[in-house]
Image (tube, rainbow, N blue to C red; front, side, top):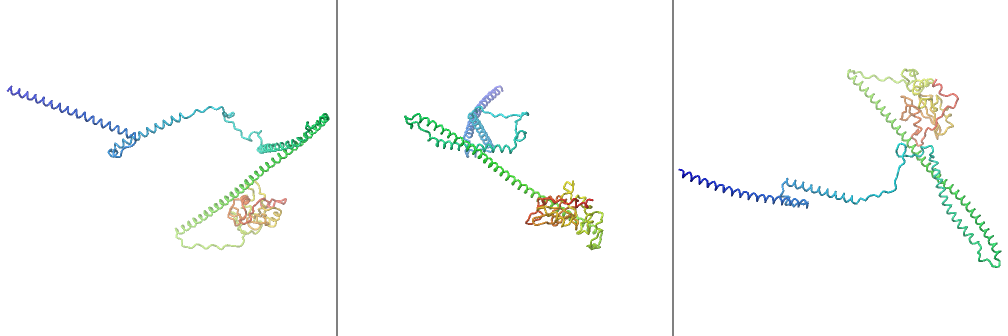
Length: 465
């Protein structure tokens, strides 16, 4: 038994040794295989790094190699290439900045500087021409500049003329001097005296001629200076005249445009009022029709009463004011109409309502108005109370004679009969037609000057008493 157990133990020990030896061999083989795999992986990684570096240097990848990469590898490759581009761009920008900094030359400090005069408020002192009491007017400065220009031009012309005269005098007297070589030796003393006398006379004559020439040049210089100054003044005057004419034309155009705007506004206002009035009437008719339908009234509307065309003075004696009639029976009716309807509206007064306007006249006839306007010029006008109707008449003198236009004073407004523009007062109507023609005919007629009272007593006394 003991022998059997020992043999089994020996065999088991051998098996263990054999198994350990086998495990060691396999471990050694695995170690060798792992190291070779690591080497291969390292070789592949180093080869991949070199390939990536080459791609980044060339910034190019072969299409076949790109096709072998998956999406993640492609994104990583694109990211690396973009980083390389940014790095190269920054290096190039830094290099350019360094080159520019090297090229910049230091500016030399110049001795010339500009300094501003400062005032009491420590700010730049500014002088505005014309604000100081010692400053010259603009016209005086212009006159002085023109006079200086004229003097300089006249002086230059005088210098040229003076040089020309001096050359003529030099040429004239240079041939008259006696030459000493022509004197005979035997009569030397006599000839010398005569020669000196002749030279003195020639010098006197030359000085006299030069003096006269200088005086003549001065006179011509003054005349030329005056002529140049006058010509410059004429040029400036013509320029001012042209500017004034252009300004006047612009003012006329502005007035016409304002009048046209006023006319358009008045027409628009009138249209709006008419539309509102028609709308109110339509609403009233609709309301009456709705009430009639609601109460079931089948009775026809009563026929309108016949209009009485005869003149009835009782129509004047109404409490709520007076209606405009086509004609009036007497002067008293017109005076009463003016006092009850027109006087509260301040008709006949100036725009500021301070006093009666000079163009306003009372109830005068057509012949009296023509007599007042007989001596006036075109545009001479007055406004009189009509002696036949409740309204006014605009009488004015034109190039064709004296004309009369009826002014409608109904509905608390004023407008020329046949016109569509309404005015709130007579003064507004007259001011409008001072810049706008009275008619649309070929001849443009404007109101220029008002005709006042000629008699000692005003003809509108009975209207205000």
